[in-house]
Image 1: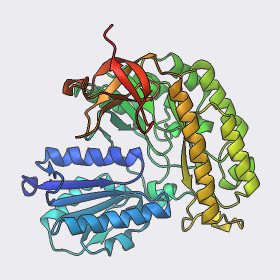
Image 2: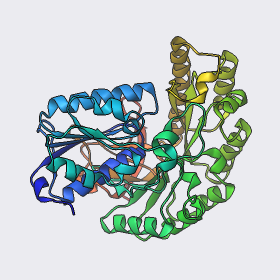
Image 3: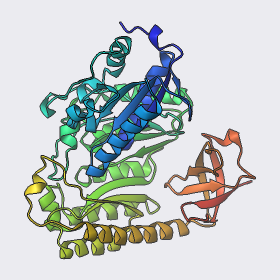
Image 4: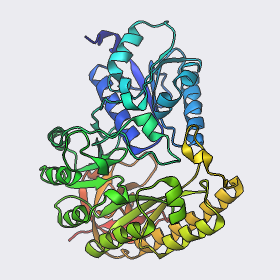
Length: 445
């Protein structure tokens, strides 16, 4: 039994690092605390509870996590500080020794965060504790479908990963692949629709692997969600290319609500490097998937993850990656440098790329990404589009996204508060000042 009286009138501060899945989970934790009488601390207000949801995908992420913990402890003296997420799972002892941290929760315990928080908050003054589980013992699934301060909802459909790529620690942090039932996810989508939600992003660690727990298929989940009344748009956050079936692509192309928008991790355009990474595909399969998407959805936005400088990536291998990406009809590259992670088998690969070369390779791919994104946006200047607008942060232009994920800004003279979470028809104009969006005017037709 959770004692909610101790939480009445308290304020909580939240900080999230990492992927959309983390943001979704943090938003759900915040919603749970709000239902217990906890308010979200505004900027500058001291918090009674601090929740840090961490990432550990790179060494830089680990460093940012430690920085965030120290900062929140410093800015909120006396607050009850909870650290969860991947870094908490992988380095619980180190996190628990940070001064000011009261509770460290691993992947299993995260599902019962409110109970652990309630027990710890009531017993203030006890020593910091931590819990962690081996990968094979991480079995819980914490449901999450929330929007926080965003317009879009994020629905967690899967957790964990069975792939064990040589560079990655996520399976150790998140456990093996697992998922809830299609029926439970449809119920969460229906609840989001009742709350006024119009767009849902499907999140997870390896969402194309959906069904390991229940024996269902990801395609069946997509079809079931497509039938939920009230939800106008769905986006799939990331799909491994070997799990992106032609059947799924074809269904999404003619579906009611699944948008022409894909995010597909490539990691390397060199077959040599892909083998060293223990990826489950080669570059030909990846190219075939891109061609299939563009064949049935010519307007599709396609984002691609690329890792640079991993062990074994010789200059020749990088040039293969660059040339391959240059040849593909993709829209944007998410480029990140390889970071050595303790315990990963990639450390046994002898060829090491210097930090200087990593920076230079990253810069070349980022410039290529800018060229591709700019060319994609430019194709739609002067066209009409339907945009789901979001409430603008103070001092910024109101923005939203088209069906194929073009970022759009509405001029302050035309922006209205009531446009938040509304689908509005606009005419797409030229680029904004920093070329991150297209300017738009209302379509009065």
